[in-house]
Image (cartoon, rainbow, N blue to C red; front, side):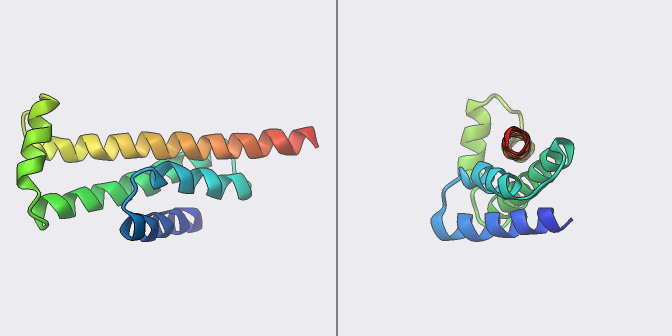
Length: 116
């Protein structure tokens, strides 16, 4: 739970300050590179933090932020019937990327620790 909160808070702060999307991979990777955790725990935590942040952000942009036009165009380009489906796709992409990055960080930490 602490890992989820730390990763999610760092993701929100860094994405609001810089606007770069790739923080969803850097933050979970770096966090589990320095914190010892099992790979499954790291993957679930990274996926949950990254996915939740992007889910909330995309819902905010779609419902409140007035991004209807761009959501409709991107949904049409991806052949998604409704722009709401784009929110789900965004969540899934962020969760997969964050989970794999966190698992990679935990795996590298475990392999370095074994070799020393």
